Amino acid sequence: MPEPEAGAPSNGARHVALVGHRLAAPAATGIGRYYAEIASGLARTADPATHRYTVASTREPGSPSWVAPPLGLGSLGGPRRALAMAWALTGRPAVDRRLGHPALVHLLHPWAPVPTRAPLVATVHDLMPLLHPEWYGRVERWSYRRGIHHVRADAAAVVAVSQWSADQLVAEAGIERDRIHVVWEGAGDEFRHRPTTAEQAAVCRAHGVEPGRFLVAIGAVSTRKNLAVVLRALAQVDPALLGSPALVVAGPAGQGAAEVEAAVDRLGLTGRVRFAGYVPGGELPVLLGASMALVHPSRDEGFGITPIEAMAAGVPALASDAGAIPEVAGEAALLVGLDDVDGWAAAITAVATDEGHRADLVRRGTDHQARFTWDRAAEATRAVHDAVLDVR
Image (cartoon, rainbow, N blue to C red; front, side, top):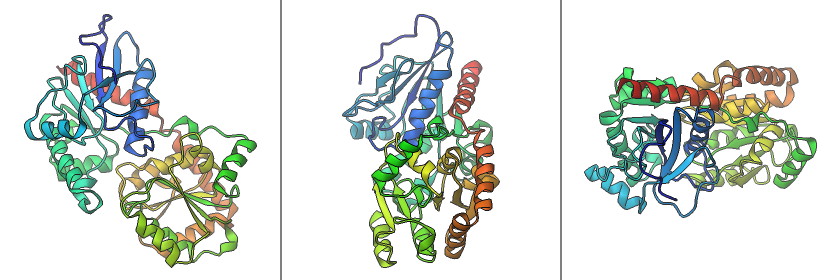
């Protein structure tokens, strides 16, 4: 990555540096998608006379394909692990010179402390590495704990992606409520776009599914995503109600993936479940929109964007009642208990057999998702930046 030029821009615009982690990840999900959407949204909606944005990470083997003008690209240097270790243990080196001496630094995810002399804003998506340590490696837990300590000690403002996450930051991280600003995430417009019949047929053919006759689960295949309960439910559902495969799992393998795959064999679902791996952004909205419904049985979410994306794509969202999902999805999703196998089987059967029920979920979802846009999230985030800078 090229290093940005030092100094303020000649037009006097406020320079905000957005710091992420692995911006060029080829199979970005969750937080990686937040990086791209919020950074691009801030740059796209900004008045260049008053605001300038750059995004930066530690050294990576490639450049993020999503960064385009007017969003600038910078580098914090590297190597990544050595730099993160120095930040965590010594609080040095400060990143300001590498970032071109910005007016404000926004840490988009507290994966490690990122020392700066500029005012600091941080987005905290959740506290899962602290509250669910069994889902993460030892180094990741340690680094995240140091990152949260840095946010608590140094951040002038904290962005939480849901009220659920904000409450956890107060109760579990000791961050004062008056420093926390809740800014919901958004669904990308690519999910609202309706593909042609030919486009939909091509994507379904590539994944070996029949349009409208399969369920889709999106996200890393992991213990946290709790696919086991849907697999057990699927084993109870009449096979004639769905095609073959009946479930497409779109996401890379994560912690616990082997156990999920073993459950497919144990439950006799071989041939009814397809693990598609990471599905690129161009295909994913089409695949989701062609499905009968999304199943999202996650054990915890700091926000949970996938049900909103399903609503934007015009399909029902069947989701767990855990974490921030009830807050975000509201009454527009069909919420089911985390371990309620019978409940999941009944929900799947209902959307497969009751067209009126399915149509009602689609209508409620279409209305609900309209409030979740990245432009709205960008404007709310910029208001946090300006509040911090104006106080200063």
